[in-house]
Image 1 (cartoon, rainbow, N blue to C red):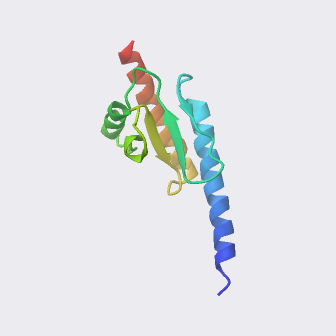
Image 2: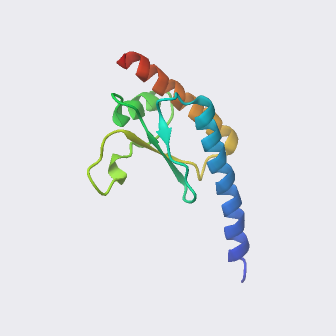
Length: 116
């Protein structure tokens, strides 16, 4: 019916806004030792945790705070490192993204303190 092009254009705008909200929240809240991708497309941001943090531990601590984030290991084609989180932003409203990233940053900050 000719509606697909308009729908895809709207989705691109929505996903771009959510990606930008995710990147802004990471820059505002995440400790300096944490790295992340700057995706040009897609619906995920990859977060690389600093040593000695392990993604599985951060995922468990985040779940205890009500935040559901997957560790990156199952998504690797080659040998995983255990240092990555995969943040999906396609379904989350921008105002919720900032809250979630802020909470995740606090979990990571606490884990870094405990590791010292």
